[in-house]
Length: 360
Ligand code: GAR
Image (cartoon, rainbow, N blue to C red; front, side, top):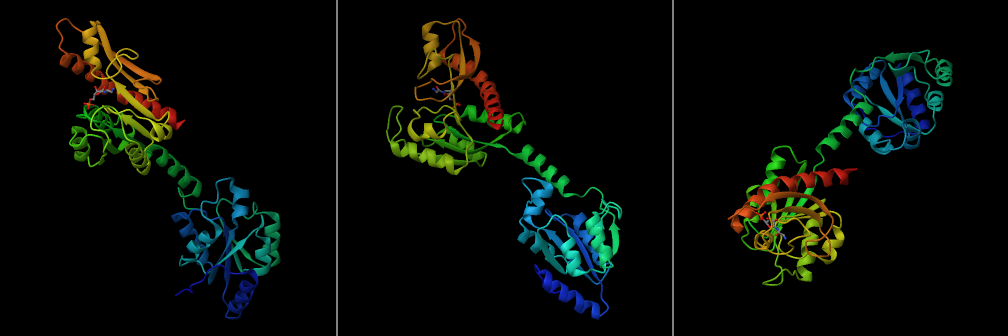
């Protein structure tokens, strides 16, 4: 059973080595950064330990790892790296060294064996370190590395996974049946939109959009708008929506049939990160039942618009539009249905585009 050891001082190590030598035991030394432990390290350390009776790992300090490997390294601090190494069966002692070379440790410890990974040869060892090893009579052993295992490879894989898996978080606000939200869910299901809906908020109790979100096991919140009628939201409602979106870690706010006016801290917090879809070719026919306004105006063409939300109603930078014809004899319901078919395509496309732009 190995001792429950931890980081050792050099002087203490030298005395320990001498006591072992009296018993005829050989100390093996190896050194490295051991920044992100992987199976290659574990197997290497086991092999190194088998070359003698005790294994000392000289661990590069944080400053020396940074100097060797660059900014962003080490991943774990020296104390943590030492603790992890000490937990391995093969490791008897860890000593942290701050210099570029391990020469000082070699001279003080006087190991009987020095082990190094197979990316070196005896000839390519640093001349100063090799001189010190020869000076203390250490046998130099080069151990083969485990193929396919390396810290840089692990870090690369992690970076790739992180990039692929990071899904933008959408917070959806709606007052109605939620068919636009349904279309967004379907685009996500189909892999056409790399995002997840994390919260759905409505000012209308029993709104279809809330049921839809519940079916999808998305967090749903019903807020009290503070007014029974009209497009206004009380200061309290504005604050609650902002807090809830923030708490859910929302990256982009999507208004999907939200019939209230957004203002104040909600607008400030999500400026440039809040979209609305409106059922007309803005700037034409702002406000309520825009499809009916278009029909009443006798236009031959209408459509839908996705825009950034700004202080004015149905204003803000236009990000995308889709057109539909208005046909002879159309009812308002038919025009709206035709527009909505386009909304379902347009909204997800623009959401994807803005998320891509935000990720740059
Ligand atoms: C959509 O047609 C949307 O464009 C409109 O409400 C409908 C919501 O339908 N929004 C506005 O008029 C905003 N000014 P949905 O609840 O089925 O998605």
